[in-house]
Image (cartoon, rainbow, N blue to C red; front, side, top):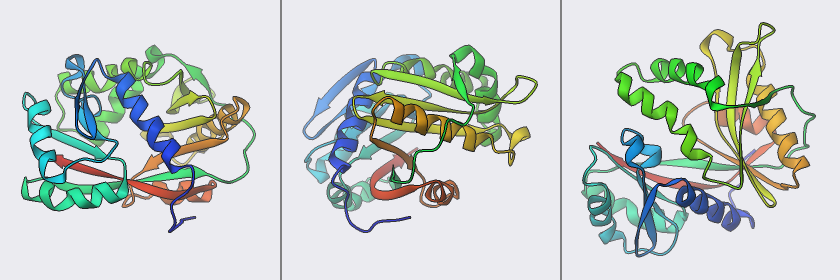
Length: 255
């Protein structure tokens, strides 16, 4: 399901995302209209070293803010939460060499399923599956880069009041699929749902998703959302699971 009109809950989603990125960061640097979230412990992780524009900002100044905050890194990543602000930033960011894409914000509007049988696990249970999945998705990564992308899960624990890692297991006890669930009063985000290659097509992602949605609903989170790539197939699967697109986030990247 998709919507062409902005959802009344979208500002709450934006606020949640902004808070999460601030809390996750080891340090932040503010600029007019946003902030840089930084963590030297995970210097290879774009998800831990980036800009978040969560208010009004001067589009022409945004490339300079990125250089100032991220100049010590070999990459640049900027999230712009508001669609109107993001659109205004497209041209100056393109001139500065940035590629622009979007992430869909999808709100769960369908019936809440029964728990799917996934359970909460700790980071130790996910280290191996995460490392294998990163090498599958990005085989060019070095061992150090993979290490940062795995260990950054620890920083995500800071991002929300209640952060859980959920996993579906095979009959033999092997982790088959997993995801993050971030919970605060009345709102929850599902993020990074992944199925191990050996267990694709066996329903494990659905079990994790159902468990996350039921867990969030039981915790009083009437607003449940996730983000998805518009050009990749999972967003169509999420739509079949009762998610509706309510907005998008602009993403600017440069090597």
